[in-house]
Structure formats: structure tokens, C-alpha cells
Length: 93
Image (cartoon, rainbow, N blue to C red; front, side, top):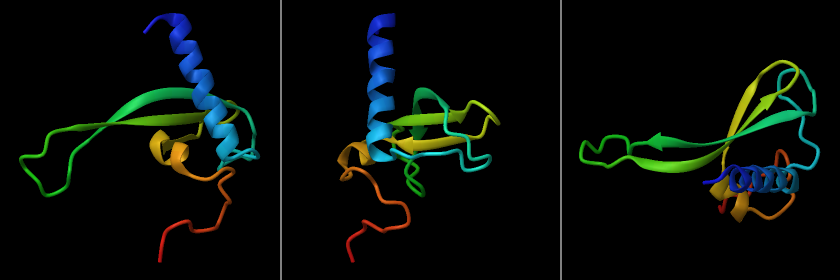
């Protein structure tokens, strides 16, 4: 991925997060500006010794003021209705 493609990708993640949580603030200090660090998290299925690793796209936010790190899987953020309401469960019953 070129540097320009990478910048576009990060900008897209930032926009996705802003649409999902338009009034987001740091969970520790309440600040509202973050670094966005795109990454993949390697996961394994628990209890399955034969499971192959799965790579899940993760959006990592790092608070500019205090450095607190918060992570979200980008797939569920893309699929959720926008904005995501804090404190409301969207899980089917």
C-alpha cells in the first residue's frame, strides 16, 4: 500500500469512527482528540487446537492528551446503524 493509499485508508477509518461516535471522548481523561492507528489483530478460536489464525481489522484510538488506547473491530462499526447510541444494546433478543 502506497503512502497516499495509506493516508486515504486512515482517513476512511477516521470518518467511519466519527459517523459511529460523533461525540467521542477519551474514556480516561475526557479529551476529544485522538491518534488513529489502523492495524490487524491476530486471533485464534478458543479451544480449537487446529484453528488457523484469523486477522481482524482493528481501529485503534490513542488519546492525544493521556495516551489511553481504545480498540474497535472495524467490521461491526461498518455494519452498525449510525450513529451508535451509547448505552443501548443493539443485540437481538
